Image 1 (cartoon, rainbow, N blue to C red):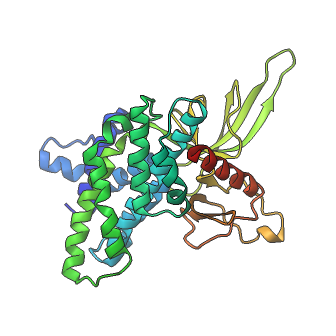
Image 2: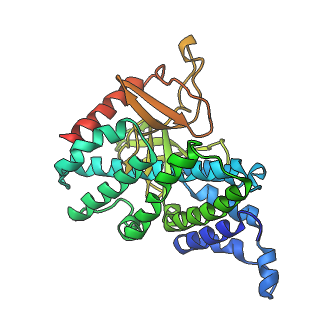
Image 3: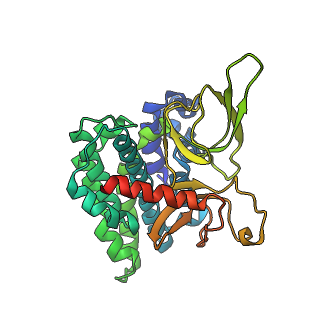
Length: 346
């Protein structure tokens, strides 16, 4: 197989278990097994994996699958690290959001050991902190007999899975920060080894294709005479293969959270969701209507640091650092972050 093909085929086959409609892309005319494999278009399968992953993860896979990453070189090795780091970042944010929601609903007891460490862990993120949050929160929810927003987490996130995440922490510290000089032979070997380990993790997380990541761009109240009000949500689906997130309208009996990024169980309604704000935000709805906003970028941003009342974010498409303080809802995001810290540490 060519580079990426083993990863793509294994992950796609796992996704089919959760979304059977994807299986049609594996149907070819040839009867012979060898010819059947040749008939599979891995570019299409790769694009479907990208589309069915949440956008922060999908965009890193798009880079990994690109033509510029087809050599077993330092660029590919670094992109494998970036992909696994983004996976861990996104899923740890999902778990933090779920814990916060359960705490507010009085459905979980947070141990003092977690509360003591959480503020320092979330303030400056690292791969080690991602694995700590995922393992710790999983244990808290399990011990409290709480329900995971994505029930698959209860089954798939086992000791073997967390051990597979732990592997990357010392590797990132050593290789990712260029503390050692690798020969070309060593780079090639590690590209192959790390791709295999990345594939194992992606297969464990294939259930995410059942869920959708959306951005609530606007909520309009629709109130016909003599009828109950409905709330028309203008939403964008955030797991496309490009940046053109097409907006659609969804009428609901009740409103969801405005100006937010939601992980939902179905795109057909917004009744059951996790609001990932302020950890994941969408700046696309922001209007660049003043000079102080001229350097803002429209993108999906993930939280990275909190220091001195300053929330810092990193974009998914935008690679340079962007100061998001001019955002019209920036103070709301800061207040939400402080509230989350307070409720998870007290």
